[in-house]
Image 1 (cartoon, rainbow, N blue to C red):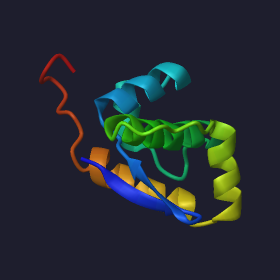
Image 2 (cartoon, helix red, strand yellow; image 1 turned 90 degrees about the vertical axis):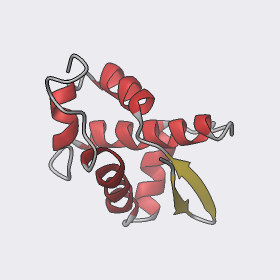
Image 3 (spheres, helix red, strand yellow; image 1 turned 120 degrees about the vertical axis):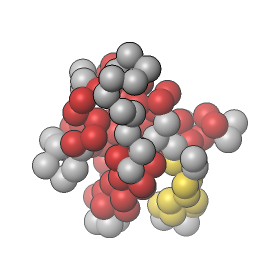
Amino acid sequence: MIDYIKIGKTEYPVRFGINALRVYSGEYDVPIVELGRIDKKTNLFKLMGLLLAGLKDGARTEKKEFPFTVEDVSDWADEDTTLLERMLNIYRKQYVGNPPTPGKAGI
């Protein structure tokens, strides 16, 4: 599933699929059981990493370039105070609404 988010004047694809979560959990040492608990209480370092993972995987899925860094995403969040909440809503819709079931597929 891909959603789109407008940041500034540009719409970016966002995808929190298994690949995005694989990259995020590996880079930020987040166990799979914690992926369903991500919310505004999660530390900002990890939240910005999650947003970057979703944006990068959305771009990868659509075969588009995404040359931005976690610092860029953080700067966008400074400029648009609604960005974090909008991205978390997409995350909740894509992942939290459809989390893997423990005990199935080895999880």
